[in-house]
Length: 256
Image 1 (cartoon, helix red, strand yellow):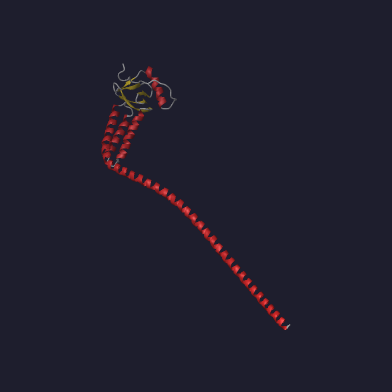
Image 2 (tube, rainbow, N blue to C red):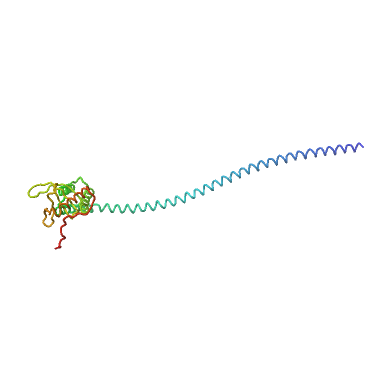
């Protein structure tokens, strides 16, 4: 009986020892599991962070590629523009080399233009002769002035030609003095382009016109032209509305 009790105590002791060992192992296992879970969570966070960083790098890389493509297109355009500028530079240099030759040719041409216009005015219908002669005199002075650039001289010459051209397309009334029968008389001139130049005294007692064949002013029939010229003067002076009126017109050359 005593031996049996000892054996029972030993068995209980072994069971208690086994029970205690198993609980310790479970705590260790649980602790180890929790540690692995914590490590796994940390690793997952690092993986997620790395994935996000990778996505950012890929996005930045794609954006950089777009920028690079844009820069390539821009550089190609710039290279074409530079090539065009170089070609333009060559053309400009060639033009600069020719400037001297052009200037040497331009001055004689302008002198001829002024001389031709002056001769034309002297042989033209004699309207506003004082004004037109002064313009030509001023133009000759400009041509002789070394302080005036060739560009300005050319502008003045072309302007004078434009003014003379416009005279052929306008109607005008102006006053001036005319020597009639040895007396200077104030008259009203009526110019119809370069086609007709008539005059009439203020009181209407004298009416006449320029005769290009005789190169002189000649008196006209009052019955035929007094009222007509008077009407034309009012139209040209914008005193009345435009309407038809009769003016003396020289016969065309060769007409009988």
